[in-house]
Length: 403
Image (cartoon, rainbow, N blue to C red; front, side):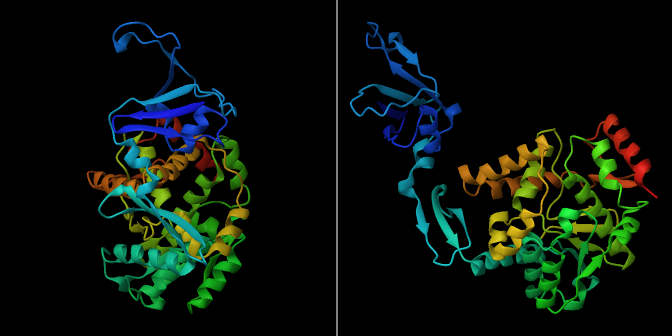
């Protein structure tokens, strides 16, 4: 059996030694099933014009026989006149090898974009340099005098480690102006405190550890011990990551405010921001600002917002691996879907994730105040996007845990 891809640019034979079905073969070549119609021509075609040919649909689940003498031909007709061969063509791509690589990434070329790519293996030093350039781009846009200081959320994992290191080595801040803070209280996040201390010590600064009781005070909670259970009881369909990021935002904001610091940096990376942007746009909402986001009196900044997580992790692979091994499983459908999409975009079209970041961040500028103070919740919230029922559920949760 032979499978041929039919396009307006030509016809291509698809080899299928390792593909059990037609669908698997198309996926192997990166061809979306939604972009083609698979068929065969009946052995007894009708007489007359081409429109009267007996074309029989062939499901993607059809098995590909291993019989080399089977002369059946299956056609996969591209249903839109686009340059799909150009996007799929391996002859227009190249590889860059690195003997001591810690990760890899596919980059578009400046002239041809996703039509001509370079698949690069990257060493830890190259990953660090990639992050350094991205951080420098954000620091060049810094909206205030750096002497006002910066609180850096630190977890001991790959993102926050490479963020802290590049900030310290940028020369933009003096060492005493950078305040690394690690919040304790979420067990699967707490395990990396020794790694965070080690990293801070390497840069000659001290890690500021917010113990569980202080985490509760800064977050405005009675205590932290029962919050996890109350959250799961109140929101059984939500992951603890939602609770953790909410706590982190509250704690870092107040920690900074109490010390007269107006800026907080966290390790939100490219997939984090792309997934968030798409999630909001899919609901008819404008994206939230990045890389700077005002939340009350504090501006959260995301210096590695254009760094793919895989490259950030490549700078500190051992720390990153330990961080993943200590995480609880995630079951939230929405969170999984939008991250999954954020991962596939650069896989299918290298560079498109960066293009989306730029475009959607410009859309965010259309709403200068997307985050406002809600008197009922006594917190800063997105002005749009929550239903009355969601707000009531959150208010009931707060009544159980707030001091």
